[in-house]
Image (cartoon, rainbow, N blue to C red):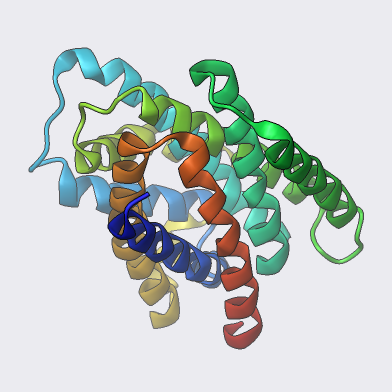
Length: 253
């Protein structure tokens, strides 16, 4: 791994660490699915006019919008409503061992006994955390675990699309995820427009961070790394995100 790759990976996890605090701040005022819709709508509006995929690439982008947009982000935001930021930051990192297992399955990436042992410890730790009282509701814990699995699956899909510009992936998966997320919001949430109109400046500042820093900058760097390097070289860096997320949650929330 080159020094520039290391710098990009560290930048990504720093942004994502603080993103847990931003999401937790925003969902206290805006319903989580509605917030996800607004997030992706803004990202899609900003990017899709500048980057257009070929028609043949839309199928993969549509699948990615379901795994990453609906599965990962939708469930992450729902989970954060019923769990504290520290618990969410730790549970969502199970996406790392999930990614390693899928990479070994689809790309024959070697796990090795060190990675395998680390994965086992991660799952044991997640089980202990899920049993702790006060960390989150059972539904929130399950939502966060499925969100982690969806993130891992999305990494595998992105690895299969190296020819696409990262911003094309970000913009179009965001835009394509808006309709199903909006439908879910209509089915399971109420008073979304009232909440959005009545949100205070802290929620809008958090949303701006989520859109610009986490969704565009961090994922642009992340997809570039996935295109150049093996999945197992990249995903372990995200284990730093919960450390940053926990510290940021204690200091800010």
